[in-house]
Image 1: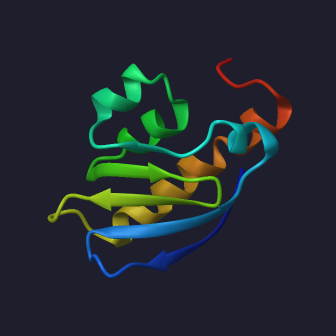
Image 2: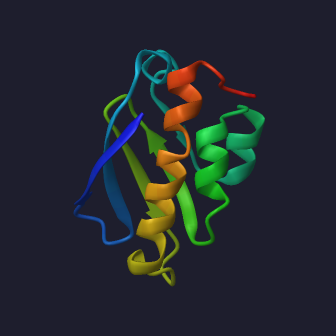
Image 3: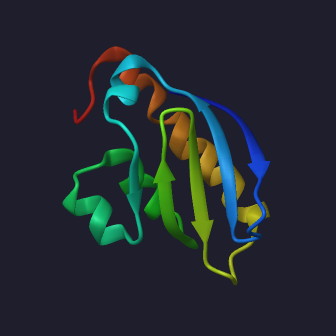
Length: 101
């Protein structure tokens, strides 16, 4: 998985992260989480890492993008670098086939 760019959405509390997913990540399909517990219950490491970022409120993970929703008091200037880093942190895991390791 490779982070490509951020795109704004009509919702000021949501941002679209355009990605290039590899075959493994694409095979996981589209998934949505309204809270961190749902991501943990689904055993989704990418969602878990994104929810570990303070201010992340919900996620929609698609094969071509990830929409991150934030709490109203969180600032995109603080979230964006951490979101990009969380996504990039999964690139080597999925590309080498070491998911879950």
